[in-house]
Length: 343
Ligand code: AMP
Ligand code: MG
Image 1 (tube, rainbow, N blue to C red):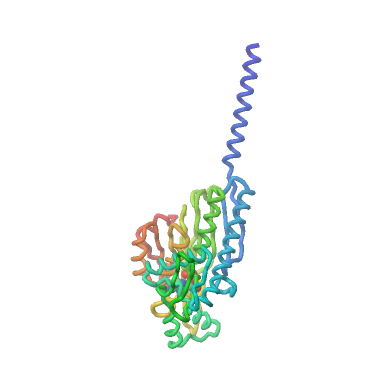
Image 2: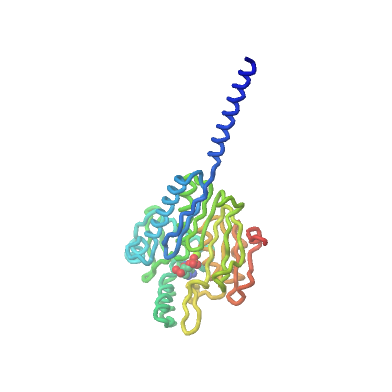
């Protein structure tokens, strides 16, 4: 009798233990889901998440992708119907009301203009347009045209009314180009959605700019990011170990124009209206992708010395630079080594 009772008790304990183990293993189950490639913002976006299950991951990825598409719709300067294009058409005539996201990115962009003393400037539109036309016609803009366009550039002439949420230009001929910051902003917004959806971790990549948080993919210890060799598409120059940080790379190695055998970067120095050609690649590591994106563009304009000086002053932010002439050798800020993987 005794033994039967003991046996039943032991069996019950064993069943409970197995049940708990099963529940615990389900609760701690993690899947890595790759959202695949999607065309947006003139490039390719990719989202990867770690989550409790596939269904939850798919739902969150779809919501994040929708947000990226929405930001592209608002901020594209190629689409005449975007809210940014409307601001560019009517901004001098009257204050133009805009959505919260566009207003936020304009406000933050102005802060990075102040921080970089105008090296980063979203009112660069007229000058960028001249260089874009030049690349189509293969004829460099005239000094006169560049001078006229340069006179329209100046972030201090961008009037943002926070109360009415309107945008206005103080100078005729001004227009905005968010190519140096919109990708970063879209990444941050997508990350916010994935965090709120309860993902264990995620990485959002738009055209090589990215941000990650939480548990890395496929049981790895960190999110791993390869820095491409500007001289060789197939080669990874170094690998970065990332946790809860953003990385953005600017430079002339992928997007440039050649006019009369001379290479011109798509990044323009607002002070000279000429393209910024000293650095072939600038990689910025920062807590948000908006910061990384804007500062990578700013440092490309500032060049090696001034660029490193600026980033060394900003907390939690690092830079790795490759000179246009010495692409095999990189220079970096004081704390950049903590992210570089030693092989
Ligand atoms: P990124 O690849 O983030 O460095 O952005 C480059 C894009 O930013 C260019 O293609 C232009 O659309 C825009 N841009 C160029 N020069 C500047 C500048 N000095 N400040 C802000 N945006 C710029
Ligand atoms: Mg940028």
